[in-house]
Length: 241
Image (cartoon, rainbow, N blue to C red; front, side, top):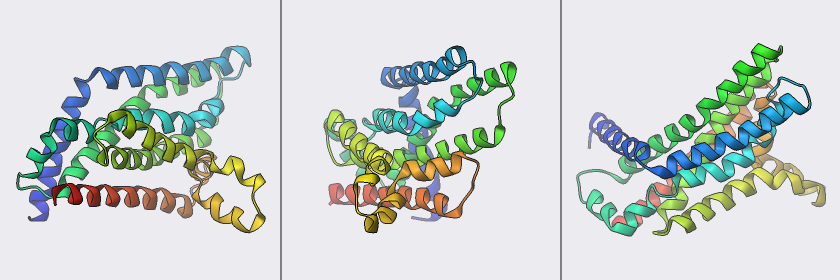
């Protein structure tokens, strides 16, 4: 299949998944809960501590995304495997990479749609205070990379099971371990701290959210995304065979 035709196929699949996303009540429920929780974090800081800033929001964002991104992606492959429509899709002249690319892009856009309304917090902080835009820009840039990586993990989790609940918990466990692993480094021998600290998604996110754009942090998220994307393609190749 030519590269141009492959791209067109992936876009068709992406559009189909986005249509399903906007007609699914789960997407609205998950997005609504995410905005309620992040709103509480922001406005608690705003009203109780009298600070118009997003620091508290970005502190807890990796943990929240660990939960909400797998919740958005859990149906992408699992539902199709359960009803058998994935087998029909794979009999068409499409490659596994086309299918995964289309579903990944739709899921990634879904996470960005979920994140987009939080920009209202920036507007509020600007109206009532003088926020430092360096960490804010860095925080949202880090959030985009975090969403990209956790989406790849989420679609991998949903590609290996027919059960959406199992898909959710598999994705959540992987994401939360990557998020929280740096919290346990103080209990580990110094020799392995450096290795595990590099594995921590939270550490790389925090580095970017401080406004420090380090290629090592970007490479980490790109590599993590590519790893789980490739594993998802391999999973679909096994299913097809």
